[in-house]
Amino acid sequence: MLTLLLTTMAPLAEAGDFIDVWVSTAFEDDNVRAGPEDYSPTANFVQRGNQTFFDNYEARYPGDLTQSHLVLYRRDEANWDGWFTEAALVLQMTPFLDPDDTDPGVDLQDDGSYVRVFRNFDEEGRHNISLTGYAVDASRFRLGYSYDLAYGGREIMARTVGAMPGARVQWEKNGSYLFAGAKTAISSRTQVEWEGDRNTAYYAGLAGGGLALGDNLRLEAGFGTFQQGQLENVPDASSELYGEIINARGISGQLAYRSTTDLNFIQSAELRLYRNSPDMVRDTYIFHNQLDGVGVLVQAEVNRLDHNLLDPNPADGTEGTVLEAALAGDVQTVLVINSTELGLDLVYKDLPYILFNIPGLTSGVALPDDLEHTPQLYMRASATHYFPEAHFATGIGFGLMAPATYETSAGTYVQYDERNKEGVPDGADPENILSAVWSNQLDISKSMVAIGQLMYTQDPNLSEVISDEQGGTTRVAKAENVQNSIGFNLILRARF
Image (cartoon, rainbow, N blue to C red; front, side):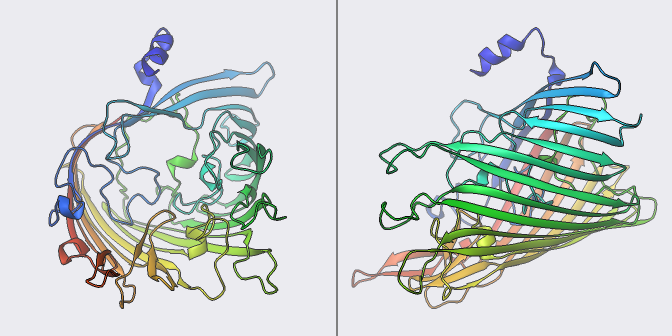
């Protein structure tokens, strides 16, 4: 299919139509102290995504992948003065993403194709109004500000949907803005899965704005409502709750301050439109913060979500729903002193926030009131120094996490993210997770870097289940060489 696509577009496409290209050769090992018997494949060129828990906070993918975006873009003056149009077909191509899926082939998917009509009220384009239509997938249009905490993309649906297009209207003037938009998705169900026809459309509405107080301070807020899907996990399909819509709501706020405009506000590239135009395509993607003096950047956000889920313990024995709330937030700080960058960040997510897209610990069911659980809270610190004449940067990073946990009759569990958890060894309490990384980067050219990383992670919560002589099972701690892992990355990466 890819060959046919490229052949069809050959007369029109140029090399520059492929933008934000990552081509990486990586020799990696997630734990040199373990081997295949501990599910560690030993050093290889196949493995990808070998990183600490605090890496790539603002990115969807790790930096050692090979992938690209084909962006066919056009901008024109409209038939009326001051009006313009732009459109882009944005296709993401990844030769492989899952380390276990190494068969030849390419994963091809839409990554935010759009059409946009806008009116500029000044020559600089700092005052405008626009209408953007996301043709296939509006996941780049979401709420929240740090990518790791952002919500409202296609993954918010309780069941996987093939597409989630939408539209957005925005007014902007000198950095201040207002927006409103909507998305829809359709989840088809067969009559075998459902009692009756459940081919239902789901809706989402998003709105918000930002106030720029000069060039260095801004306040932002957003609100959204999302239909996540329908309640299914009921004892009897004849229940009145069977098929009831799961309605989610979210409100977000951010405060951002910088001491100088030479420091850019933190904004994930995953939340921006792709444009293949001379004023947007970068000469180099290699960047190091450098100032003539000292600069400070502080960004803090908070997100509160809620949705109606099945009541796990109805008081009178009848079925019902409850509103479950979820909370997350972060504080990101950057201090730049000439060519040295220091960072200190705090991140908080409670258990309902981590599980919000499932939704719930048991799908569609709220956490019981008597369930003992704790939030995820972690700190990450970093220090990097860049040597301009040598085109070399070296840095260290450190992270300490108090993981999200919950306790049931079956034991105590650590919830790392919405899909991954670990049972704590029997008789033990959950413990903090420690990670550290030493990273070195040599900028070989405008497009290529060589990276070497050494990583250490201590996770005393890792366990395994063994059988005893009586035929029962016991959860015991993983071996010391697994709980204390040492890994490395050697990466040669081109990005252009």
